[in-house]
Length: 142
Length: 93
Image 1: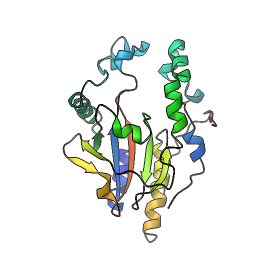
Image 2: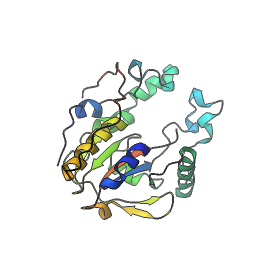
Image 3: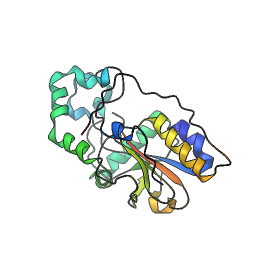
Image 4: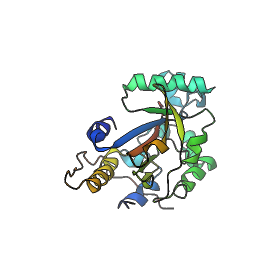
């Protein structure tokens, strides 16, 4: 996503990461985390605690894209679906042009390339990110 | 403009994390009890089931205002008619 943010920075595209509740918080006692690892990341106790962990995330991964933080009640997160790795692509008119329950950078690259090329056909942009899908995934139909 | 991606339906309905063996590499599946707990959890199921219906493609994204970790606030209203934006969710774990 950092790569995409750099690529589309001068083409009127903004990428935001919204920090949400920890899906695998140490409190839940996953086996992998009992010896340490993510054990220290526990459920958020307050808005301030959540903000602190969000800052830690930015520092840990050296994020340059803005990291948005919802309240501990997850009000906004629930409005947009409440999933831990969802993604929305919204155009200038405020319409949702793509949404998915899982974030794949190569797909977002494809969508953004189409959007910015439609804005200014004289400066076409190609998808540069490799298709990172791994064969063997089983699609789940509703 | 709504872009109907050819794999949109497939990806929206996918519940497994990416990776080989349809996501079965994930640490979640090392613990059988946890694995079934996650897969059969009615709350988790309901979120994934509802997701395609919430804010469908082509609809207006709601105006939301959130704090930025680096300081300040952002409102999606500020971006309208100015910028496209991508909003993704994530966490440390």
